[in-house]
Length: 102
Image 1: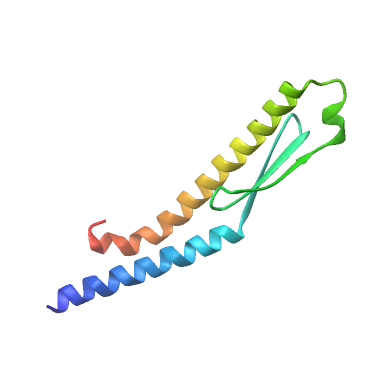
Image 2: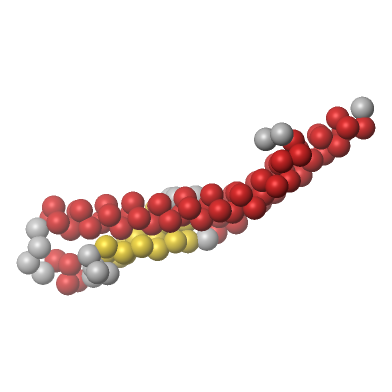
């Protein structure tokens, strides 16, 4: 019975650490740019878009489709980086979960 209680307590600890990590990730930001810095996207650690900055030079002699591609590229790269960051942080929590067989 003590083993079951220890297992339950370990599960609660891991769950608490995961919830705390989610809060921390929401407070972190990741940036990426496209077009040699013409477009910069900022996302939080959960992958939510927080800002897009477009340099005035991005409009000089360029069509909307090109600019749209730059915006999408910057956002996709920022989200990819945020996912990598989150995955790396989750791995730090997992050793505690190893005792749970997770």
